[in-house]
Image (cartoon, rainbow, N blue to C red; front, top):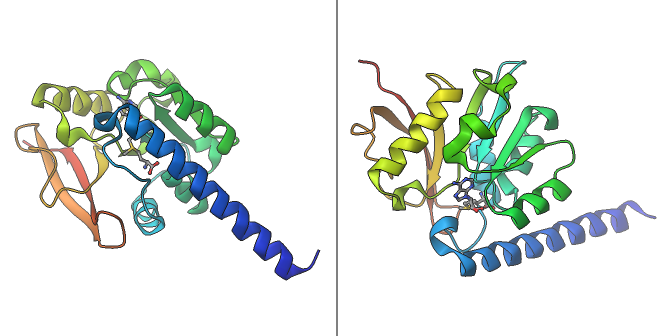
Length: 204
Ligand SMILES: C[S@@+](CC[C@H](N)C(=O)[O-])C[C@H]1O[C@@H](n2cnc3c(N)ncnc32)[C@H](O)[C@@H]1O
């Protein structure tokens, strides 16, 4: 097979994957729009910008909460996170099954991010370098947002989390949740344009 043909088949398989991702995503969106928060997966640009924000010591893991079709997971792997150091948590069973098939070697947990201390193996508690959230927290009542913040804090003390969002301003009332906030990224290269916020426990 020539190089050109190989290139074409790689492009074709990547195009097939994109179509499959978009169709799985849309199916889930129809089933539960509030849980999905968006109608299509995140763009390559947004995924790469998120991956560039990841910090991890050698013995730490990266945890992605609400991994959906795995587009961000793939960008994390491409940016050098070893599969065995990537943990993705997804509450919808068929999406978790899809992630398991699509991301060999990655730790896929079908579970609730709000119950992270229970869902994440104990050996990983305190060993989370970066947590990334794809769950549309903005739509939730304050008490549930606080539950999420507390769940991350229990396994990643002091680290906080990255949250990508289509909101123009902070999607979380961070002071009320005891957090400090920094917008790390804004990109128009996503539909809709997106930001990535880093929230961390506020120093008292
Ligand atoms: C905006 S989508 C993720 C998008 C992903 N970045 C992509 O582009 O494919 C949000 C995901 O969070 C999942 N989710 C929602 N609530 C969750 C929870 N409590 N725990 C874990 N996953 C959750 C949804 O099933 C959905 O797959």
